[in-house]
Length: 310
Picture 1: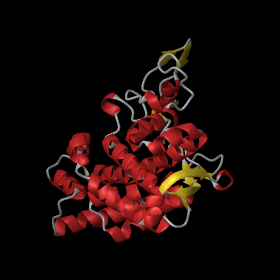
Picture 2: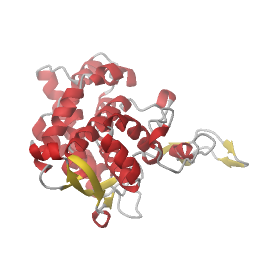
Picture 3: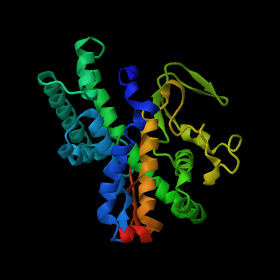
């Protein structure tokens, strides 16, 4: 299933998207320059990844806000409740209906996008219709929610480490390293759920077959045997071998795109902001078993002189 579109997400292919990502980031930040404050999530990072993944999928620009609202509802969970709330179920059905319409539109008129690849794969017998719809569902959520939260989590970590923030603002060449360290210590996905197919002996206990298991794979990124001072945010660490994007056959297919979007996002933020502080009394975290991050992360920033002049 991954091989059908994996070519769309290789580092070489994703690199061609940089100008598009940068242009859109600049468009979002332009009206925020003079305000001296903005919500990193609501005003910026919730919009940037959605625009890019919608462009790759071939969805119209005017549908981005609607789709982003649906994906937010799909991953939200009420406090203390793990089942998908009714609003999430409605959003899921809305998304599936929307994907049906998009696929039917490709059958009437071809487009060179990912949806068309799924239609062609279905017609060639490589995918069932249910698999196509499920694939689009995952791409729409994963291509939006995780990168949105990564950009926000990086703001949170930099605010908590003002010396590293100062270094980064003075030297944007370090931004790619900061993205990796954020993914290591505060990535947007910490857990994946699995069901065991056999008894699993582990640490003098046995997880029985058929058990629901939460794999907290991100705990490996805090393993002091691998990373000295593992619980600290260290900009110079540049940990390329972290598990923030998974690994092996389960490595995140969109890792190169997430890295590009986060790097460009922060390059553009630092072009308008010399320094910023998170308004902690106004932040809101997302309630979700899959996604770790914020729904609101307001910051106040000191505009760069060059940005004010422009």
